[in-house]
Amino acid sequence: MSRQDQRVAVLLGTKDGAAFLDEQFASLAAQSHPVVDLWVSDDGSTDGTSAIIGAWQSRWSKGRLTLSNGPRQGFAANFRAMIIDPRIEADYYAFCDQDDIWEPDRLESAIAWMQGHDAGTPLLFCSRTATMSETGAAQGYSPLFQHPPAFRNALVQSIAGGNTMMINRAARKLLAKASARTEFVSHDWWTYLIVTAAGGIVRYDPRPLVRYRQHEANLVGANVSWKARLSRLGRLFRGEFAVWTDHNLSGLAVNRDILSRDAAACLGLFIRARKGGILRRLRLLRKSGVYRQTLTGTLGLYLAFIWRRI
Image 1: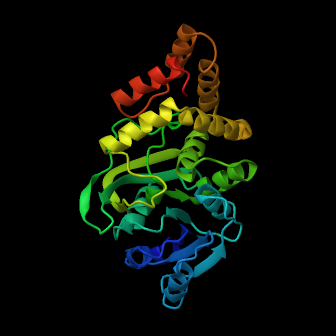
Image 2 (image 1 turned 30 degrees about the vertical axis):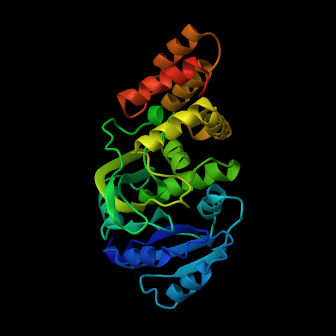
Image 3 (image 1 turned 60 degrees about the vertical axis):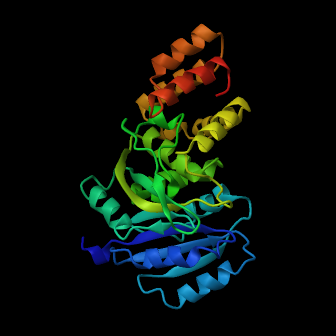
């Protein structure tokens, strides 16, 4: 299949993104891959976002640019609406945020990796990000994870931002089926969970292929600073991680038919590990093999189980 025959659907969720949207569109237009359809779901912007999108519609030359009204129920529901939208058909699907900048080979890097695998296997490509300030000044990088992506990791951690993710048609079909049955906390974490739960393959690229803009309006910030780490610790003590885990487990419960045998066994142990006395919880957690990407993260996971905060 030639490059011109490989159609990518970029799913872009917007909400009052006028400040940075032009830069993001410019980086999408600069993608080295030639065929890119943009599907934009705007969640009720009032700041001129729709006008910017309309201006780009008239000059988008890589494919089609379609604007839809979002459900106005938050960013997760906005992306869910696009995931399950039967109008959106492509060979590959990439999530996109409104305020980042993509490197020119963001899409082509993912496609090149996917072409080395069976198209019938659910595939997920993701990567590190470079972080930048509100004005675009370089600041650093997201963590470089070393452990392999897997369902045992996905149960307790989202390995990468949705803005770095691409899935193939098999993964999108699977994700749409699972997402039609339930809502989710975050589209990136949910995608990682579903693809690995079904025995799909995940590639975590160590290269930063997206420049992630940090600013006050960001819904989810980068996780590299001490401020971010303290914020996560605070959420842990408040029980927010436990609530998110409850949501994820509820979603998996109504999608048991897509789980591989190994994922189902791991999930059963993990669910049992959240109940009972301390020793029983720790024993079952260890038996499940669930892990986070860093040693401190895994130690924090075990402490969270002791405190019943996950």
